[in-house]
Image 1 (tube, rainbow, N blue to C red):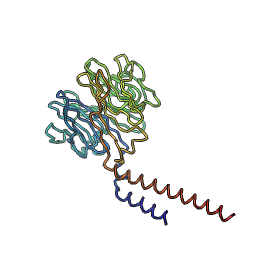
Image 2 (cartoon, rainbow, N blue to C red):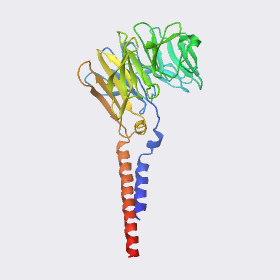
Image 3 (cartoon, helix red, strand yellow):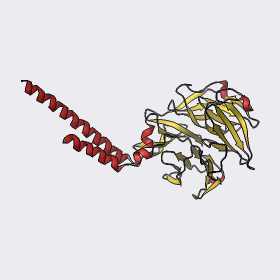
Length: 341
């Protein structure tokens, strides 16, 4: 009887949070930007939203049902995001919250929009990845699409189709006019003519455990990158020398970085394999920290999943079931010993 009651209790709590199974996405976003006024904007992949934190203010959603991994900051605080294929859409959110599409869903562009950036002329850069290929592509303001660099999957410097990429994630423009890419364990640079080089001719993190996601380039040419696999944020010199500037600890892993006013802003999600808890909406799943030039990191915001209370109820029910089963097992053993006597 106790076993049946405990089982029914578990089923009851599971029924109260049906979104636990449907909410999982298994995705991380690295989009975080800081405008000249100090407003921090960032992506929230588990929630499917974009947030803004004004200086001294509270976080506020500015875009809903938007699953952009990356964010690009435009003039006047305008934010650009992209919906990955098959939607393959490019949208923008103004400071007042007005949303518009620059490329509407279903345009059938040969770009997967998993990552993207824009240049000062309005050209769009994104990637098309296949089983054995990684192509960096450019779409001009007139709508013409060209393969800028890449071909078969791998790692090789060169121009155009002679270059090879492993897995392009974050993109950022440098003060030298080059496009910087987070490509596996390496930072790559791409010139306007499609010439690709590896920063420092080396990997900046462990090739097996390291996984660079978001990156940004400071005005002096210093690169900052989020090493999700090693749970740290890196400062990388123009010569390719990497230095750890933030250790995320056991629970968190950096996904995106931004630099403003000499401070580093870090977007973090739960590390693997704990990331599934964030996808299920259970417990804390996202946070933003500011790393000042002097002093300890400061948490600007931390977000908890909407299923946290229900998830704790499920956990309590499961623990209760285990306790009752353990007691029943002990009683059965004790009774069998008495019968033998």
